[in-house]
Image (cartoon, rainbow, N blue to C red; front, side, top):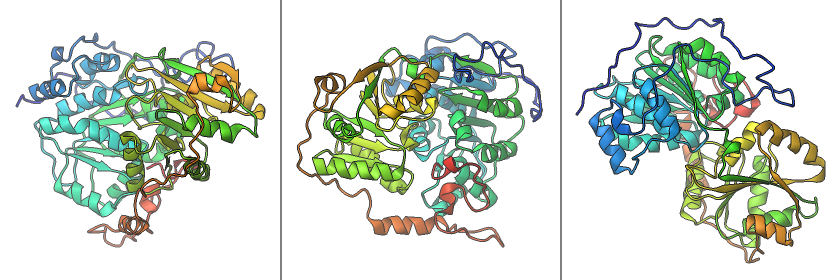
Length: 497
């Protein structure tokens, strides 16, 4: 096996000071027509220029086992975000990278992380590399994407997320894992229970850093980053780099090189945007006809109750629909996603929990049944389609009293949608979405998980094999939301980790 990469870099770095000043773009250049900051622009420019991009993986100084695995996986040409960032990240540079969802960010940071960790062995409970993500689904997706490459260089990967047994996760860490992929709340719980120490972590990645800031995870993320090696490498990747990320960049990244190689998700040229103006009385019928189309579709609504109500209506009308939201156990959510990917369910109805971290091949339609309030939610919902160069459509159903707010939201997102008044029985709806009449024959999908198993899993969450002396065991399910000793900074963070 090829020896691990240890390319030269600057001497041992001092940790960046919390109040270190950072240059910022002039307000006139960093604001849009509405006066709001342009979310897509990084606020901390690079000091030292980065290396030129590569045209093939063979140009990179990586272990031969990783290059061979790329070939076996059919990954022959690097995506732009990979070609731009890997030359710098493999040398140990701190990286601030932006690429739209589905652009290959996982391998962009994953290959560098694995290459720089290869050949090392972690002590029990002391990982060498860390990937922080905002949601359970994204953690599992990152783990699945990195596993074949980690095996090639004999590195062990552990996934640490809420909603699953904390005792089992503690046992996995005790057995030893070089790479940990985690949500902030659950990892902090394990650190405070002394099942995990981060003082040997040399490479740290924040994936979807802006969403972690939006969801109120900054206190947990900051606490965890304070625990990793101060002279280590840090990489922040996101589909958008807004001013919320600037606090993390100024405090924890040293002379980062900034790579912004893709347009925001909404600006993808293979993605069509449609606003369908509907009436209050006709919205449910319009939604049902779109759901009955030939092909899979993800539908977004605001609340967990709205998800469950819509799924019940669709099942009753003959549409095979599944529900995905933070009120489901992790096993239920996994099973629902498996059904959707396998075609057993043709409609996935979700809250924003699925706006990031969900990848489904050949998904050509996303429907905002409830329009998102924030333009970043719009971009990331829409990012479930038109991935990796494929085409897709994003459709937003808009009631008369929602038009002004939606117009502002899409303007902030930088998209120019086609606006069409539609009726559930009209030809325009068919042309845009492929809508058709539901069969009317009620259907029943297999239950994602017996309730008994869900209760057992919930009861296991609060138990670890060796709780810290004198520490009170949290109530079942507390770790799922980062509760107990972990403060919940924002209401939106509930259920995300």
